[in-house]
Length: 411
Ligand code: DWN
Ligand code: ZN
Image (cartoon, rainbow, N blue to C red; front, top):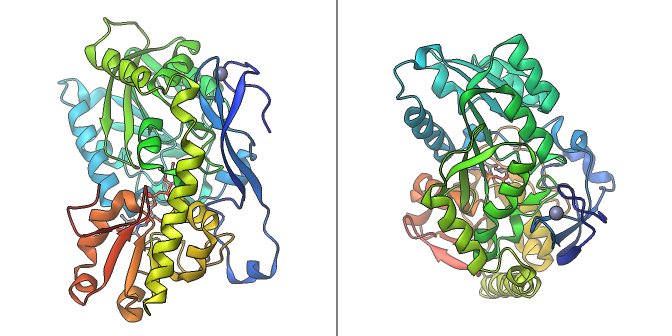
């Protein structure tokens, strides 16, 4: 258990949530693994009263989490479209053909391929060898490395300073975010722009999205706590926008020079103060809200089964592992999970050991109810499963309380 804050070093750390001992969310099991015990780790959240950063109590070695990875960003059209729109928006500059764009935690190249298809020089950096291979096969040059200040300096020397640096869904994952941000500063051109996306802790609280808390995510940022880390790295937040990814994220724009503060930054920082997210008060009800959400989900699934219904899951997401391991009565009723990721099919969710099949299995088995475990993609998923709905299948999402959904209705 961490006794001091990973960013500011303060010992003023207050526990705000415990999810008990959990397996590593993306360590999907193969059939031979089922005869072995799994390593479990405490999954607890602490609030730093000094820099307001919410963070895990226990750390797991990054190599255990990311050397081989189960998550492929391209499995979601929502993610691909988000990357496409952003790349188009950022490359409206006449000199763009001379640009160099780097992505930290570039995964399978889902974002950089958008720039590359417009003839822009790109470079990915990602530590997961299996995912990097997919990116390289896609024609996206990628270094298989953990990004750091040293790597940033090395790329600036071996290649050239970057006009744009993306870092989506990674700043929450690294033990030393200030070092990663210093690497971005070292690689960025003087006039360069960095774009950082991360799940916004405000929306985790709103949705009681405790299933987005897993050992891969060391940090749960507000703009306030993120800005503290940015300043410690000698960079400046120049703008911010909320995006509808992963249950509600912030997209923060950084530069090496300070610019006049834009209203968006002040507005979000003020909102966080009003919500109590920059003090312990914003987190004090979380444990109770989580227990209530679990109770409501388990009761709903009990009544489905009590009425003779059957339950499956959709999306072998990291969220699925955390949710179902925290809700054992619900897990007992979920007979299988479907997922479009080839790497995940034929494997089993960690801990609860629920089998994962291709999406086609849903129509074959025709469960009466399907819990959308990847609820952040509920619309995209339901748009693919209209036949299941037409045949009377019912989709529902788990949080903050069980809610039956049809296309266009999910929050
Ligand atoms: O930070 C992280 C977030 C961004 O993604 C990673 N550390 C881990 C990962 O979290 P997750 O696994 O909870 O992410 P997703 O994107 O919610 O997972 C969606 C899952 O659902 C994937 O396994 C793919 C699957 N899926 C599907 O089967 N059919 C997704 C879509 C859109 C579909 O149509
Ligand atoms: Zn701190």
